[in-house]
Image 1 (cartoon, rainbow, N blue to C red):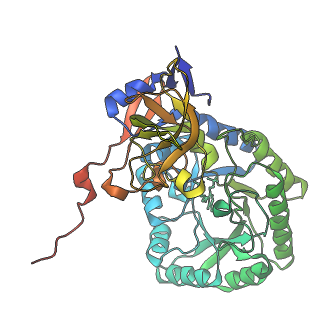
Image 2 (image 1 turned 90 degrees about the vertical axis):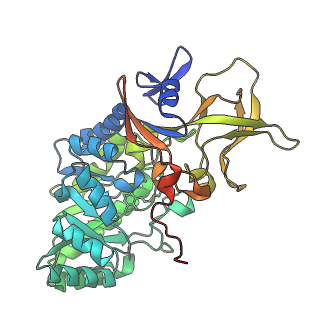
Image 3 (image 1 turned 45 degrees about the vertical axis):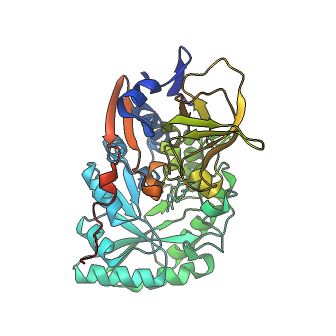
Length: 419
Ligand code: LLP
């Protein structure tokens, strides 16, 4: 249990609000976030950055609900975005575009133009064709785009292959051996201003060692460039810090961020600004997916607990075989039975948890924990299921921050053939 999801008289609550009250008021499935948990995680990064030239850019892709972005914007966060859509969300939430960094392997011309029009702080660029495209778009708009190169340091982040990004075989970043020539190419383009360097080696990383290995390679590049007269003002160390889903023991946020900042300073780069791009570690354990048991289906090989949330609501188990703890909201005293917790979608891959010991009855509520990151944002309308509602708890107040999608919403933009 995280600090903000606790049991009160046996029943699961978030901050001061029983989850049963949220289900009664807003129905299920519903994503529930804790404002205090978001704030606490952000403050843990801020504590490490205090007194240093270092800032946090929340990776919007992890959870782009406007109210979540609003909480971070109010705390002073910057944002790491990967699309024009995410930029518009940041603006709608009151975020400052001058604190926005635009990442992603293939930004469209339209998105580049939008970001330039809003004067974002910079672009993390991943290839020479992308530099050329950005140079052309900036030239057309009479602007100069500030760029960092995302380099691929060829470091094993020791995480799931689908969320590992800093190895040679990944599509991400400029290959390490091409980094210097690519910087030279960037520096020669008239509508670009080279300002920094970026790297992101993966996600759900639970050790510091791969970060330090990547950081050392990044600093080697910074030094080599400086010898050539290309000066970088900032170093973006990416995101990727893991959280506890089951029994992982990632480093605590403040200690982790401090270790990286100390390494930057120890190597004589303390005057440069350092950016962190965390997603999961800011929001993952601040959210849960609340769902209701529909039916229990005992079987010879397996017992199934069929709930009203499905792979379209939370894709991580189906996509990565990810583990999310599943907690009964109001536990029974009955002996637990081992179930696979599955959804109503017509796929065998539609499961949320396997082999879970639960004492449950139809109608009971379950909370799928640690679902604040890459939960709602990866949801789909598969099986023409409306996406879940999202609520934010703040002390004893509950705010609906996204309405449940209704069936009519789902085919609003579709057209019948004329005749
Ligand atoms: N910066 C960049 C350039 C990224 O690509 C990512 C995540 C982040 C920052 C934030 O990483 P975080 O701190 O959240 O690990 N859907 C997967 C995770 C995909 C991560 C994609 N990139 C999952 O559910 O595990």
